[in-house]
Image (cartoon, rainbow, N blue to C red; front, side, top):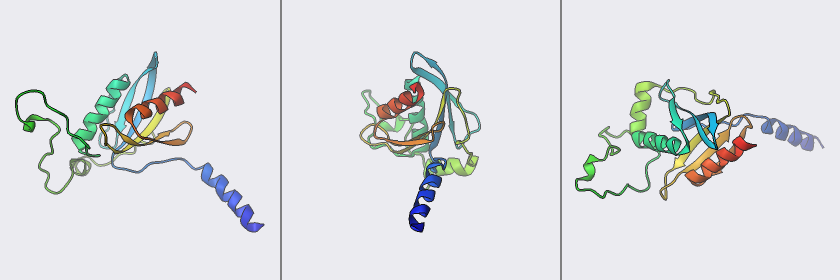
Length: 169
């Protein structure tokens, strides 16, 4: 009887706790406006004070991909193909010589780390962790801050659908 009471109390306390993610590549997407289901907003990350604005979900995904390439984290599963003459050394995302450290570690040491989980968007706020970039897409977790719901996604398209569904409810 006492054990059952304790379990119920523990379950209640756990369900009321705030969902949080801890990783070196956290992104906070603050959705500010909606133009016919194509959202505009700001991207915050842990290594800069100023947000990165995006105008539409395609722009959002492209800017995140650029950040992940700059950080080299999570690392790409596949390299992009080239259809022009020249060498692959011309590719801007190639790994730089940072000794044994990943670029994200060097950026973290140089800029420090900021909390991005306290930002708020007008329409909605999503904290995103991309764990893998495999099969030419993303896999990871997203937390809808306003509803305190954590959902796993297996593709960038599924991430966009999760965000859209949460914003339309």
